[in-house]
Length: 430
Image: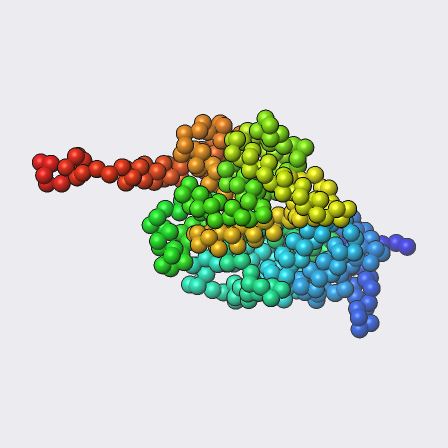
């Protein structure tokens, strides 16, 4: 069977669609005959795209109709992901969340053939406004749809925190994957993959100084995207959760700042409490993510106490207990879910009446307090597993200086002095 021959596209002004060819696809649900087009920059490329499109038809992975909307394609792709069984349940859940909270409400009503890069740039711009003060003054239909989708989920209110750039890019990646099979049979290019979202601007941490805390108590205003507790606030948090089952996890996070996933996958085999060493492996974001952290004796004692608790739980569960080898686990020994750890932290911090930070904010706090305490930047960079010392200094120097100023002010206020003995203390001095 000979394939149809590509022809020059007389109506095209886009080099990507300079050549075009039609082919026969399965009839629509109503029995209507369909002959979609595929395109190419050259005749050879167009012919290759035709072979790819026919292969998708043969495999049953062809989109039913060029009138199909993005929402339908997202649902179809989600079914494929679930049926193929290649994804971990947590990954599939994150894909489903990206579709249900952002892609379907934001762009699901658009036809596939009408999608372009600017739709995904607009979606990213709207996502950046979620839960920010500017959203009230710049509400668009797109933003209203996103906020309505995020109002509740499973009967619970969605987080009120702004979205991170990493989350926005993950949502775009899900869209790109969902559309990848449509090129070139339906789309000449993948608009989600081609969309340039701009370079993520790193948000510098801000310290919860007393004036900022007072303002937050009055108005619930959070002054920055990344907030850090002072040493006093961190101490109050740990004091408030001493009876918490996973106190040791939050203690370790507060003092040494491992990443969330690093905490969840830390094993006892990588923990030497006698030598006070932890081998942090993590996701290996950088080569230096795999590192040895030396902990203080008090933290080692906290981990010893936690190990006794875990062993008691193992005895109570008996044969039903799962030996995952992890340091921090659920009561039955199974690994902790990272998302649950963040949710638990939010609950404990709110219960303590403290100004809000994220669980990752404990990592920021550990870095800034170590800097303010005079630890060498190289040591801090190694403890946290940063890629470079320059990164540590660039992100944390300003807030560490602010923290040091707060500590200096606290010391000055702690030591009582008569005004006459303080230089510039009053008119009697002159």
